[in-house]
Structures are given as C-alpha cells and as structure tokens.
Length: 133
Image: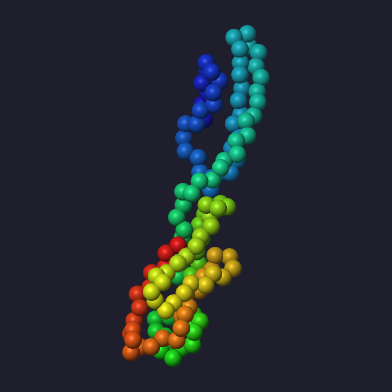
C-alpha cells in the first residue's frame, strides 16, 4: 500500500490473494512540519473472488468391470477441492448424460463414479468417461 500525501488516500500497489491473507493491517503514521505525529491502524477484510480452479484427483479406479456387475458398482473414487471460499469454493461434478454411469457426491469433496445400470459388453465394450468439475 502507499498513501497519497495530498489526499490521504490509501492505494493498493500490489496484488492481494484471499487464500494467503484474509485480513490485512496497515499501520499509518502522520507527522507535521512541527514534529508532532499520530498513528493509526487500518484493518482491511479481504473478499474472496473465484480465482482458483477445482483440483481433481483420482484416488482409485477400476480398469475393467465385469459386464454382469450390478448397478451402482464403483468404477472410480475422486477427490475434488477448490481453494476458494464459500460460494466460490463450491464444486459440482458431472459426466456425459449419454453413458450408463453417474457421479455420486459423497461427504467432504469426495465423489464416486458408479454404474447406473448393469453393463452389456455386446452393446458397448468400452467407455471414455470425462468428469467435469
């Protein structure tokens, strides 16, 4: 920060990142030509913006699934985290609607990719699944 000597305006001179500091304190001291001075503190609450992408990690996955595996067979477990706070940190994951799989939201940013129905190898032998968060 810097202070405009004529107006007293406190001006931001660098970047602020909510994830590094949620509150900033600026100590200000003013001195007149006669040598008298006073000081004060300005406390600045930083408001988070949506500046971080969600981070998706595959915790486990199955390379192969039996075609007679029942509905809700777990294919993969994912961990999804967004460092932003509050609404900016809320994450929803989705997959293509045209495949027989679904994403189930678990507690604390964990997701399961599961079969939506029993699979039939004669209909489709493999699937390319993209999870978007």
